[in-house]
Length: 541
Image (cartoon, rainbow, N blue to C red; front, top):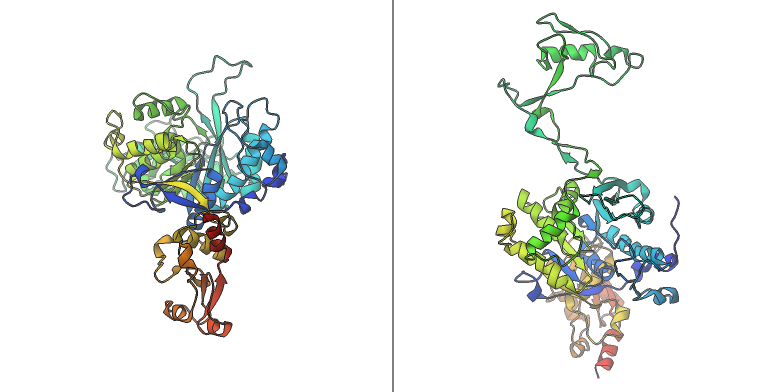
């Protein structure tokens, strides 16, 4: 497979692996949940690369639909490359606003996107899909990056969205660019889109047919006489004796099959010879009420997204060119058919994706949840505020559901400090029990951490395929000095279920048991480095 090469690629190809895990710190006052929860609708404020890595322990392999709207790299967006990659070249790029005169702006954009796409892929379910909005500035580079990360065999579609209502009269080259692209990839080849709804309003039952509503369908075939001679014959109405000439490309069914359909009353005969017989298709014949989704999307435009935002913010649009919620909802409908699906947007902007998820749930009674990540400072004043207003209601809204409010909650989280053990050594604050448990469980087992099963009193933090996992720890320097896996603690650990081969994996600052006693109690011990609390104590002085 051809591979895209760009300046900086060698330094970012595996950067997502060395990005440290960070704490997600709840900010109750900015959300609407009585008790903030990682399993609520989420809005995370912080660098989206770090936030995606922080989500891995609890959400790896659980996201059904991802939609992102990254910088288009037009040269007028004012974005800067800020990933802390350990390379002189990359450090020289940090913090510098990227404009059209930057000869490396495409390299910087690819360097920014590659590690994020790799983390996004890890978060997807096996049958999940990612949609990425982009324009002509980077669509060719994005296609190559996504082929590399997701596999070109998992390409689903390139949707073309007619985002502009009117022709642009300001064009310099005579071409009005009225579209954007939305590249869609699956994590595997099991990804299937739902398609678009079939118009079933044409199915009627004027003659009270006992088989139910029906519609008239075409009987003309698609094969020449040379290719399919059995489909070329004269069709006769047995009741009137009127013969109907064979169409140039034959009939849809063979003579034997047609006779069976006539006997079943499935053929609609025209009142005159000049007409052509048609097929009576019942609504019950449809295995699904969906057909293929057109890759040309024309239902809504950017102007409607701006009008929607102004409606929510009392005439103001705090962010330019927002996507309309109906546009995002259309994409969500294609893949998040499970009403408990998780939807992620790591370039959240004004929060349109969260709005779209709530709107979809209001329409079909679903319980889908959203996870939004916003790097900019307007995460509270714009993104969270839009969610708050959509949930509580917008009195001036035209849509009755939005006017009333969609209801529900969301939890606001701030990206906290690094949890990776090597990073803790230079921090002044120890991680919380839950944060360290999440990090340890995921890195030790490679499986999702489930906070709801964690019990600090018994030290239990979760079950993996091979282990029951325990963490003996408290975020207190003095208390840590006395914490150890001793005989009393080993005996007090809950009994293991699942056979003699199953073990208990225990993390603790130290142990007072020798190897025979560990073996006797079915324990695999892993020591938390003494430096975690030794050096924290020194920096606190």
